[in-house]
Image (cartoon, rainbow, N blue to C red; front, side, top):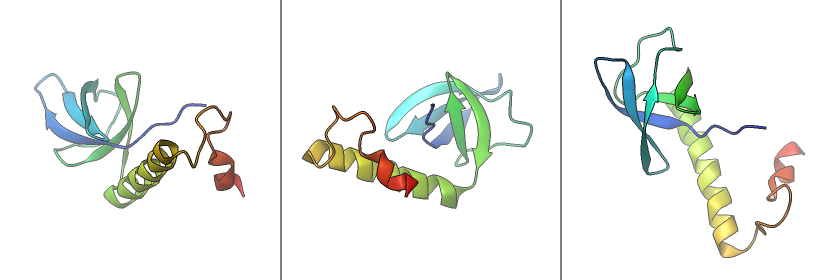
Length: 93
């Protein structure tokens, strides 16, 4: 299973590559697989350096909030990182 954390576009160059930010980490991704127009501030889902899908800002921010909550629980020890599901089974209820 692959999880994609929403990434915000910070800039787009003339070759259709973008600098995106994912939970504070910046990286370069290619935008060629997305048919619709993209601009600074849009959110995309990426996989191995390629943006796969544009998502709306509200959904992106809600997903980011959930990921941050998971990280906080891992850092506090509430979720044991040695568990196979990292405590994510609660989302399948």
